[in-house]
Image (cartoon, rainbow, N blue to C red; front, side):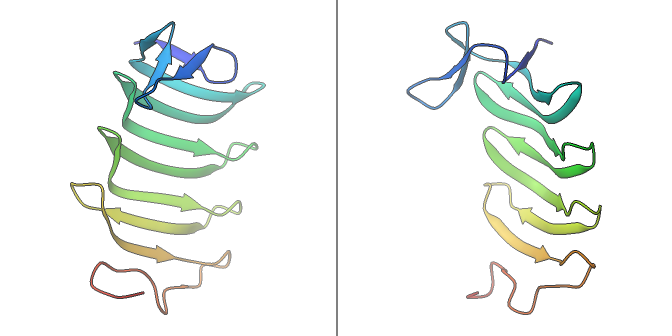
Length: 122
């Protein structure tokens, strides 16, 4: 599988918003680095995000993680505060629609008083 760095390799976005590399829709791994530190990792198929999607804080702690299917989020996406505690958990259905969102502050306290749910008006 090929790998490109979004900061150093010449990429472009096509008119149809597909990631292009060397004039063609890209298939493979796309990373973003800062020095030797990996900041993000995503996978593309024919220019569309498909597969694991991960981001890290500059010090290496996980920032976010989820799965993309044909350009849409699928399943559970999580985000973390810099201190390592989970900050947000989003649940997506098979169509990429957000169905549930849970949020927490940096101490781990729930912020879900009026949290988003597909069955609520919040």
